[in-house]
Length: 101
Image 1 (cartoon, helix red, strand yellow):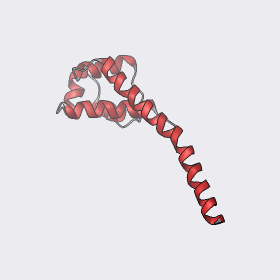
Image 2: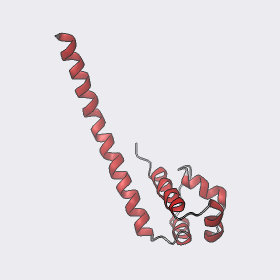
Image 3: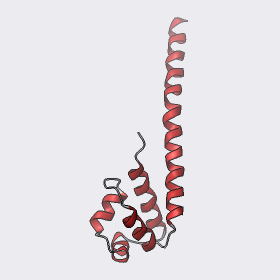
């Protein structure tokens, strides 16, 4: 299952680190508790649209860019999930053919 909150947290953390900002700096700029931002980055909490806007503002990052990155990550995860059953089925079929030989 693809968890949007986990992928959103990954993107936010990556953008924060890329900008060389600490959680404390983002917390002060966004006026959101450090602990709550940490939970969002770890995918443990859902971010409201208002909170997400504050975080994006603190990171000087357009919301549309964050959502685009998350959308791309969701697409990759979904593709991986769709590919897995076929790969497993092929491997099982190969085992059956090999054991029959």
